[in-house]
Image (tube, rainbow, N blue to C red; front, side, top):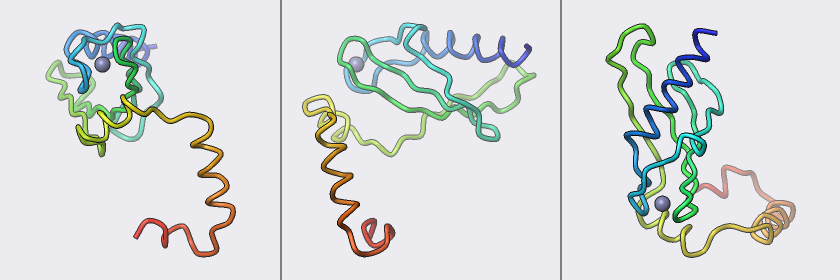
Length: 114
Ligand SMILES: [Zn+2]
């Protein structure tokens, strides 16, 4: 119950302070979703209603009992990635193409990441 209240407060705080990295719009609290917790990180998904860019974020909570929570939004997406996704979002055909590619790949998955 206490963690539920903390998460609810976190989502409200995030919606008030964070802006979409693509268009600068504030997030509505209904578009900030808590996905889970990994050790000291809360994993969130934010969706911008203005430009449609979904953003995954991990929020580091220094100490849940203190008021000095520290928010960090590490992301591997660059501004170029965000602009590309805004102009050419992934669709079901991309997923099917990737599935076919993986199915026909003869090497290991780590070979693909080199
Ligand atoms: Zn946006």
